[in-house]
Length: 348
Image (tube, helix red, strand yellow):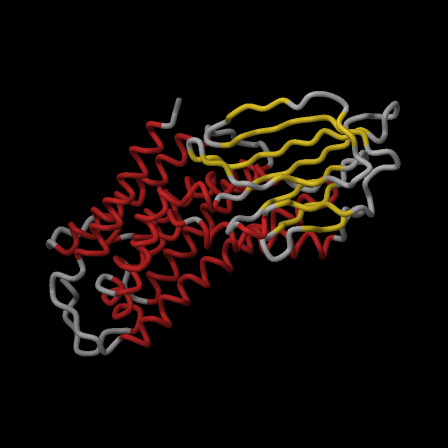
């Protein structure tokens, strides 16, 4: 039930179009495909930590986290500098769909200035996040991709380099987080008017920024599995609110969307913090890394909203049947309900 007006605002027309748009349907197709493909595209993590102290300055603890899906494992592996030698047997275990391999290596002369490579990464569609922690607690954080599967380990990075690295990580996290995007999409479908839209996005940004900082700095600790389940449940809630509004029973999300965006934004911030915790923060530039990761998340979110606006401008003349709004709304709700059940089942 759209508010009667002869010349609806752009923001209002965008919201109405999103409820019937093909782009929303395409996004839903990605949502439905994600449970089957999610493990394949999750990033792998490689941590190299100086652990020998003054007595053994060339000893490093290497932790390799590789996504698995049942018996299927990504055929990738880290290749350390050639002069590094294992000092004992590796320890291997499974942790929530991740195969973790941990070993001690000895690298005479250290590893600064030496090349590291991820074998087999070129044949995948995933990334590898690297964290190299030196003896002085400074770190190098980098992202290895199929196009760039190798890098040179260096001394402490400049703050400018840290800012760039964490900005990219933030952008990639939000654009790869299909559940966060579904939540933003659902909000856009129920909000009309530029002021309400800006207030809603601002509330969501402030809320997830608060919990991202608090959780990353250890001020608040929340188990990640329940958080992920409630994030999925938040999408179900907003999808139901859209149905109620379209049925003539507008709820809180329609009347005051910024309140709902803020409340659930706090939960989404914990989700962002969980992703950042896997990478870690460089000890010599924690404020810089945290700030630019959050800015990266915001940039990615604005890119997503901008893409929806561009699509609307391109297809605004298309006339959709009255029932078409149900396709993306019910699709979002069903997908999010599946995620909720799946995540609750994985609590153990």
